[in-house]
Image (cartoon, rainbow, N blue to C red; front, side, top):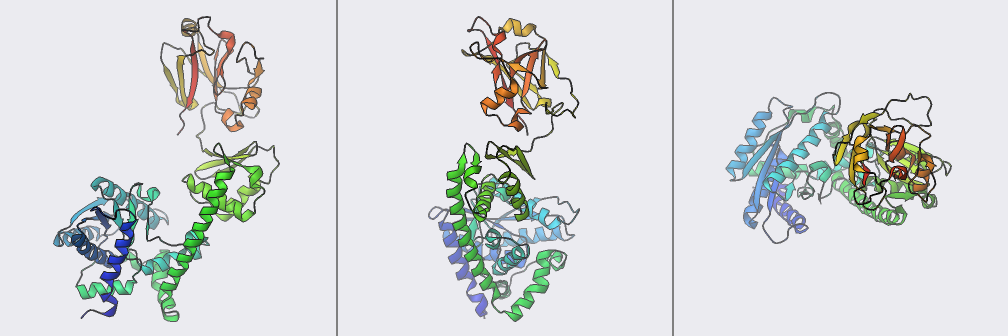
Length: 474
């Protein structure tokens, strides 16, 4: 006889899965995949999903990721494949190599596992990936985030369904968790009543891992003192999700108002409360695919980039980018590698390095990796250009500016220093330092970001050639 806990599992699963799939593919048959480790939770998921897919005409696939971290990993893979075959379900697997060094083994394995699952779904054209996360996993996630000092985004826990392109590497894939309403005890009761076989991962008893420590030591104590705490944690997560949605709506509106040509208007940002500023900036980082900064880092960034004097050229370094301020605008810029010979012409402490000599021999483009880009040679198209024969005869040099260079962009415009030209063109200081110049016999011929010097212009506009610089920095 089925236990009361086990009896409601199939109905709860079926209702949850139908609701989740209605968000993505309500009518036509879908190809659904499940992530199956071979443990109790995933074996319950396999049993329930195979039955549901047969009844509703969907194709089911079983994917297993072999981490190689246990001596039993081969046996786990065989167990998953045999279980899938017994149900008439196709299985596939991926092997990943996890770096065992340091304390991040668990996180590294998780990252590799999800990327492998995303790759498998793409290869087999699965549009939905089911995972076996359940109510106790949700409670553990909320508690872990609380212990880390997370805000509403972290305390929201796991969504019942979401897309996670950064994790899965597959923007078209829906990841769904139809077991989320069910507790571990309910799943265990169902597995016993159904006579399911599963494997036990010995690493789950290793309390050096934070989640295992919670599962082995903290959750049993909570269950004894506060029966049903998992459901209450889940309700708190739902409240946090609602609050986070409201914060996201507010940030989207603020970003739409303050974002100008890809930069944030600092003047208007100063009129907002700090809480609203932090909310906006976190949302901005998220839209750029950047890791969420800590509160301390964000506070320091706000102090440096917003509270400093208006004419300051400031820089704050994020692990994946630079945050800069220029003319009272905040910019996200890539962290660019140092380039050979690059220097700030106003920094006397850096020794000049010679530029790179070259000849033009009719190429339409020349790559200069040491300067971070490609020099294009193309028709001037009515603008300032030079005679092709004259250009071919020149000994040319590409370099970063050293200071004191002067450029005349048109016959009716004055000759001015490059710094004045850059300022007039609104080119930020950090970009100027990476824009090379091309000269001939010590005379400036071209400045990237500005254009050709007209003093060498050709009389024949129909054949004249102009230079153009294209940055190709990784």
